[in-house]
Image 1 (cartoon, rainbow, N blue to C red):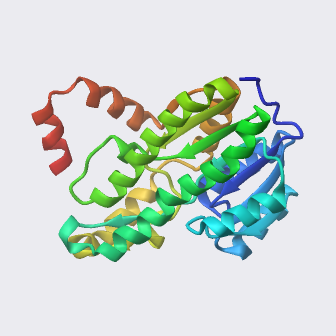
Image 2: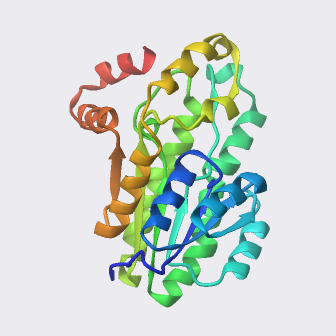
Length: 257
């Protein structure tokens, strides 16, 4: 694929109202890109767009018709960052099937919708790069995060398959797997069962976590160097290597901790 110069590039970022999305928008704006901030929270998207001197759009990525309308309105896109995501925490049987449907509709279906609709234009033009934000939880099993881990694992595999599929069309695909990032996602997650009692501990843990700009840097570097899978944060880089080397029973033990 051809290298995409961020100067003047049209960069669409979902979930851009806060956290990783906002940090990525600001970083690309500093490089001279034309940023399109997309979020289900229109006010937050506008705040990011104002800071980036870009444009803002309201869109529910779980709705394919809304994504198609957005793509028609924006036109050709150079870089797409699928960042919108939510969380569900708690033992699997203490969550509901509605929790699963809600999380999947955004974390996985939302990524699929955007890849399918925006990706079609990139493949047709033989130009573009898609970055999907997954999570270290996509390869680190955890007994209280079954739905979240499953959705992020699916995003990793989708991304790697699309990377192989679209390489012949000169379209790059990267997947970023952040560690614990101070995005505030825990305040917008559905916590069930024993996870509810751990809210204060979870909040403190996020307070000591990485700044979202750590991930934004990983996004920019992944596009610049056409990297496939990037673990963002020293703890997930270490965990990724350990998970590949540790025997199965040890991995099972880690998941239960």
